[in-house]
Amino acid sequence: MPDNNHSDNNDNKDEEYEKYCYLCRRAEKDAGPFIALPGGMHICRDCMQKSFDSFSSMNFLDLSKMPNINMSQFMPFDDIPKSQKVKKKKHEKKEEEKPMPTLKDIPAPHKIKAMLDEYVVGQEYAKKVISVAVYNHYKRVLTDTVDDIEIEKTNMLMLGPTGCGKTYLVKTIAKLLNVPLAITDATTLTEAGYIGDDVESVLSKLLAVAGNDVEKAEQGIIFIDEIDKIAKKKETRSRDVSGESVQQGLLKIIEGADVEVPVGAGSKNAMTPMVTMNTKNILFICGGAFPDLDDIIKRRLNKQSSMGFAADLKDKYDKEKNLFKEVTTEDLREFGMIPEFLGRLPMVFALEALDRDMYIRILKEPKNAILKQYAKLLALDEVNLLFDDSAYEAIADKAMEKDTGARALRAIIEKFMLDIMYEIPRDENIGTVTITGDYINGKGSPVITLRGTDQ
Image (cartoon, rainbow, N blue to C red; front, side, top):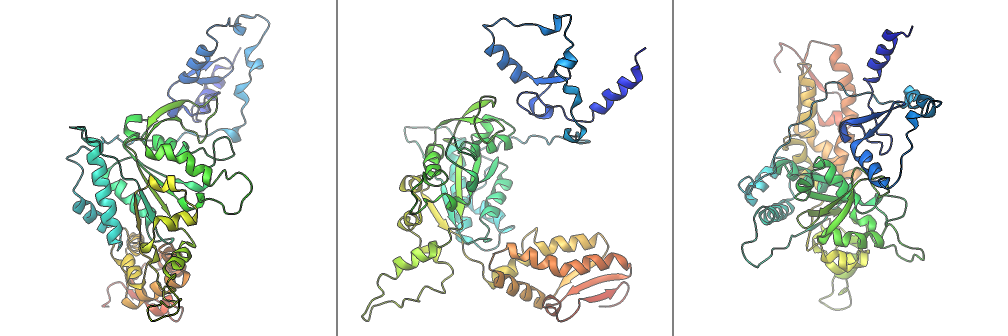
């Protein structure tokens, strides 16, 4: 007699694991309900329909009607090793889809900038530029053309040293406006047919963020980071598949065209479903650190460094940290960006390099400042975390020495907060911990105040 209880237990165990389509390898939660076939094989409805379409003119041989063939032995899909199975997420709650904003929902530029001010310190000019550009873009997208005047979109190119807030600025504005935002890295892109992601993969990521809703994705924002990494390679004799070729592949996508996009994949292949997206209303923002671009700008600005009373000193711009604000299209062309690509990014602006005062403001002012995060962690242990002015200055000085922008702050703070986060939970009598500049510089200890005592 077959052991029905044993088979029921196996079925219950299998329910704990994700089911994947045998053809496209998508999970059931992404592809929809599966069609179960003999031998424990599952196929999604899209792949099943494609199979029917492909073999519609052929006669199927139904192996299940053959008396001498055991399908479970012919296709043993139940014997997948446990190490290759993926458990389902428990209590997975789908977020309610928020509707796309209407024209009334898009705030005026000064209101957008005011919202950005709560999260991003400094960068006044960059915040003004991006506020106006995004506002005008969605006015264009959300209103029908009344007359024959067609408004073209204004894609942007953002320049700035590492850690100055390029990606954070774009993330913040997409969050505030509740529009789909895809952030992709240009370093993974190659010309179609080579190892790496095709240029269409930037649209695939936006489509995934929009929940595979094409109409919603066609009104989103794409931020292509590290755009300077696809500059033309100088003095190369081989085909530039990750530089100039990528720039050329991005031309039609950035300008606006109907593009076939692979769904849920970085490159096209025979088994990947495709969908057509129109990029006319997608706002493209490109950003990059552009190392050594400042040397190109210096050479151009120092052309007048010659003999005479009106000559400039050759080292006049050596200590200038915000040289990017002097950038021109010719400088970018010399760096390696092709003119056709630059022509599709009409708005070029630079972010300022961070100085000592800006570092201190970053530690104090934003809503989610890193020191506020640590204060909240210690507050869960009912301990107050305070910083005096000398601590802010010491952290800022160390960050300037690293010269990696705001990213240096977390590394510095993690180092001196390690002992505090380790020792505080030991003693329940500690009420307040005050961080001083001497402690940051390794010359002293934090000031600890016990509960119930006056500070």
